[in-house]
Length: 217
Ligand code: E4P
Image 1 (cartoon, rainbow, N blue to C red):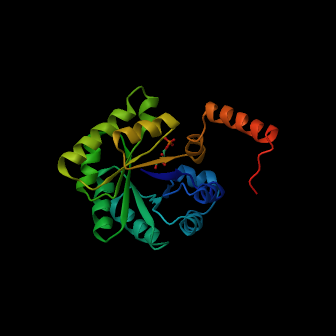
Image 2: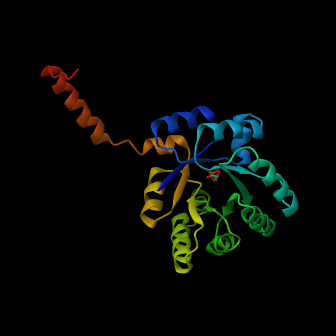
Image 3: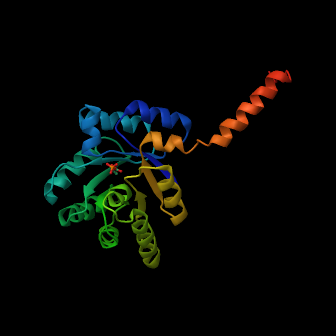
């Protein structure tokens, strides 16, 4: 499973990348706004840190404009994935941009039928939003499962990028279902390493290291 950081915070991205845990980055207009940076500048900086796909989202809602913006974003670096919304215009832009050899991430997916359309439009990634479905008392993980089944039924190569991840259990459940990628806030990815028994066990070992005078170097 690939791990993408869902952030435009370059310090957090560098930190995760240094840990060796990062396969890519996703951004969106809200994350760019939060960074307080110019979209082209911050995206370029992120692309220089991370080798894997970096999703940068278009701002237009009409296909021709999305295509023009997508081409401009793709010029930033070879690892840009142009992010388009799951609308008919977005699907049209996806078809054109992916046909030109660009990676395309179709975002704001909330149904299996939407995901089927994105695969037919040649999307590299489909981004179903788990947390936002859970927020309205729907089952985000059920959507991941449905998309997995449909893509496997027909051999679609579009990668399922489980998005709007809020908890470590979202990541575990997406992995059990077979999502190809998760994108999550860096803090959630790092929290996967936490376990109270690890802390307790390490404390006991450290005490024995000290009282036993154990040293290696
Ligand atoms: C995905 O690409 C989106 O940027 C993101 O996962 C949305 O998450 P949110 O619902 O927490 O805003």
